[in-house]
Length: 633
View 1: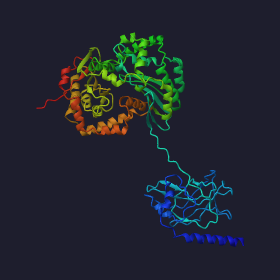
View 2: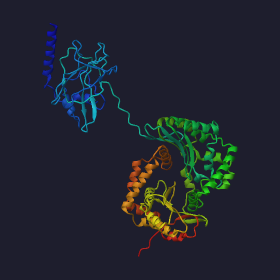
View 3: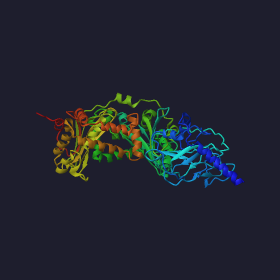
View 4: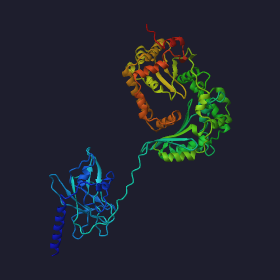
């Protein structure tokens, strides 16, 4: 009797379900709330499901939607208790009501009977769910997963662990005796927007904090870039910025020199500093977890350096020995002389180390005065790259450097008060006993923010560099290389382009045997440079732009290069220029643009020259000046 009753009940349910086939109403607005969440991992239908919704038509209306034709569904997991569900047939007396029945279209495959799932979270010990459906985009990537049942007592859909999509036809199930409890759809907050790896924050005192995060990086570089260098010194304290670089690691009010060194070594880090004509930098390279400690050390040495009188006297001798070493590096000497003659009687003409007389006379008070004048928050940038979190970096910067003063003269005002003036001139330090002749020839260049700065960078890449010990030989792309290689008139040469706030230097530096045709080398250099004012080979310009892009990327191949780029750009541009924008500016340089820029900066323009070595055979200033243009009749 009981078996007959169960069989009759099953037949009634099948008849009731089949009677619903073909009677679905067209797609209506009632399906909109259900489909609105199709971008979420699970689509939670309202319960009870509306009976007049044609889900097939509704899903077909989704743009670019494709239904897959597999029929197999793997394992499910209970959404309430994470207990793996078990496959089972419908057990008599325990059928959980479901809002939908799912009919599979195997497209020629053998149909399988509908399965429910048995779990553990419901009161009855069962967590039955009808299998869900899947849709995907035309590229074959599964993008949406739809769970259709609410048989679980806690109203949570089962999550499919290993699903395979299948084609489907949804039919309202109306034969259940027990309706499931009504559960409102669970709201899904929109996902947070992806955070940019490049972020800049300005603190209340004017200090800028900038970072570029590299996901999963184990190391980081964090530093403080200061808009202060030898340019912002007076004639009496020239060399103070470099002197402070030495004093920074000699102890603070909270750490003596030994404790400072021990702390950095225990982190396995690297703490260093450098000074240029317009910028000073203190930076540390550490593990990502040690960024807070590194930034605390940087804040300590910048604000609480002891500047002990005995340490000042000791460092005085160290700097004097360093000056003697620098004088033995001809390249350093040449470029110091080049700046001195090109920017005569202006701050840019001063050396970074300062004269020996200043090094011997600078006192602790002079160094403290320089810190008060130049180490202000608006002229500083905290830059970090690698495994750093920007929000934490901002909080650490507030703690370590939030006490910096925000008043003081700006660099723009200081540059305006003492602008740089280019003077066409030359200086020659003749040494007949020197084995090699080192000389540099430069024209007035462009400032950082000048639109012509990028074309001059392309010209620098076009002229290139060459070394006789390299493997390229005469096959180098530089127009000067064939003459230098085939005739043996040079050991090496390179083009340079230096930018400052209000001016720049652009030119060529060469090393040659003083008795091996220096005039021929000078002729080749001037022909290549001045010839750009009359036109440039399009293929050479394209190659130069590609070389420039690669050199910019190679310079940032690591956290240290990225951090330096961040600090420098924020100091000179006031913002971080995206690579896409910089590359677009490079791509905009055409041969016509390059010719126009060369006409303004090279054609019939005065130049500056500095030479060290046996200069007897080096042509004079007039000879080079005459070749800044060509006579054509």
